[in-house]
Length: 194
Length: 194
DNA sequence: AGAAAAAGAATGAACGTTCATTTTTACATA
DNA sequence: TATGTAAAAATGAACGTTCATTCTTTTTCT
Image (cartoon, rainbow over the protein chains, first blue to last red):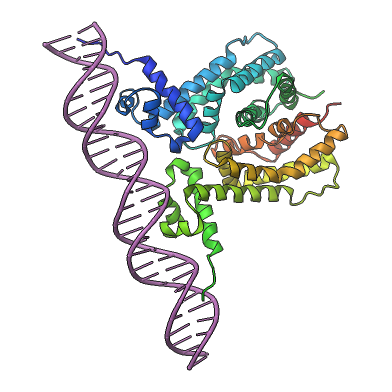
């Protein structure tokens, strides 16, 4: 009697192939057959791991989002000061977006198109809680502007997505100095001005 | 002898239908047949106005981008002070992104996916020159941080795209107060701090 | 040997595009 | 102003292809 033993490697290869092909060609131009070929697998095999194409891309999104937030908070400790904590998280996010370009590109594409189910999108949002907690503390201490978290995110975190995209496209290359400037701008836009 | 008289209305209807369908379903799920139906036109007619589907979406992108920048600079006068000029342009852009939501959504989708040809994308960038000129002047006067224009754009303009998207999704509703806060954050992030 | 996993070929639907034809238009002639 | 006509514009049906998915068979594993 055989055991249920679907290979996690095969699943990961499929997820990876999905990211790469969707990044380069867009969702509309990445057929299941190509994904299968890139993952060295028969098209039929995909359906042992995923219900259908939509499920494959939803699961890929959730996987990448989880990796993103795990990376972002890996070295964060809630006992840090607000300013130190924010700088740490911001720089981890910047690292991820600029170095794990493939993953970040994929997220940007998902977050700006209807290619992902609403439900999967919802699932991806939750993981940001530690940052929201930090901001709540910062507002209480009078260090962070008393604004909606959406505005704080829009001004301090989201610009990194834009920089990642133009960097990937080759229009612009971010060096260490740019990154420090970017951090200062992010912090300027959310800290209470004295 | 008949005159070449393809109806501009029909072309516009096709462009409008493309925007609406791509916004709601994504590029991969908007067939030519649906675009034709929404524009009250036969599928074959599309090919009198556009070479193919790619050409249709490229032209739609360029149209919308032109409308966007035209709106942004409509009331701007290069003789204004840097701060006044920036506030004016910023608020026009905010207006466009938040009120002409359909158009702005479409641009966001195009700018974050490979659905547009590089060449069409290039064509869309040029129109931003007046803002770049304003920033150049601001840097010379020591009012604007001496940073790359890409960074200035990422921090002062791009956040509006994010706010537009979450507003469209119903997660968040921007009122006048938020908008003023958003402007202050934008200005904070690019002005030289004294 | 037996059961799960994987494969390749097959299927039917959907798509972008084209074709053959009809309808509309502009205008020359009466 | 009315009519004929030729070319452009528009159409619905059809074409060939591609795609997601399934079916049947083969391979792998215990």
